[in-house]
Image (cartoon, rainbow, N blue to C red; front, side, top):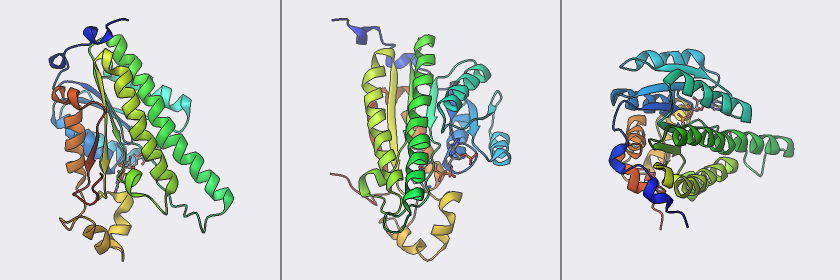
Length: 266
Ligand SMILES: NC(=O)c1ccc[n+]([C@@H]2O[C@H](COP(=O)([O-])OP(=O)(O)OC[C@H]3O[C@@H](n4cnc5c(N)ncnc54)[C@H](OP(=O)(O)O)[C@@H]3O)[C@@H](O)[C@H]2O)c1
């Protein structure tokens, strides 16, 4: 049997800064905070967006350092995901870190959603959240293997994978699948010095959930955590950045809860 692990780059070989980082869905919210965290670390970032070009330009303009790029793609199609990997590879001259942040989350409560809307919601969630993540991971991993210097893939999952998402069941299911995908890839890619991990955040104060946090549900959502608040995007971005560090190689395969003790898995 081949001793593939012996050929993997050592933990120290993966650089701590100056990496080439692709962040999907960085037009706003958590993706913007993640892009900022890597740029502040001295990395070069490909800021990807789906539909909000002006917001993505604002993310790009906020990044310290040089050599960042702005890239558009619909990652809900296999072609779009492949084009994004190729564009990031070309713009940055390679890919060392992939952060799978882009996702959709639209309500489709089973008791009140028509079958047509139900099937459409499932298809969209699977296409973007699961298949988009899988296809970007495949493309980035192949680049990292060709480069021969290891890599990091960090998935943004969700607490909802464990706690349940009664009004967004396709979201919860696809996030559980993203966690499982990351664990399979962690085993498959370790011989190439590529570590793969996921974060599972609870509520984050992003534009997408701003109405819910400001509305009647807001107090109850904040009370989910014994800290009495929800996460700032920068708190989740810090965990993502650490999982992409050289020191985090031994945490490959983990699903890291970042939910302010609002849900404790056993
Ligand atoms: N906010 C929370 O409370 C919370 C909690 C747990 C986990 N999360 C996770 O954190 C991540 C970011 O959440 P967020 O609140 O920052 O969400 P958001 O503001 O809705 O951002 C989602 C990003 O994904 C991109 N995107 C969606 N569909 C796409 C597609 N088909 N092709 C390309 N890009 C696409 C969007 O691009 P455009 O805007 O340019 O279209 C946007 O940049 C997601 O993975 C989410 O599931 C969030």
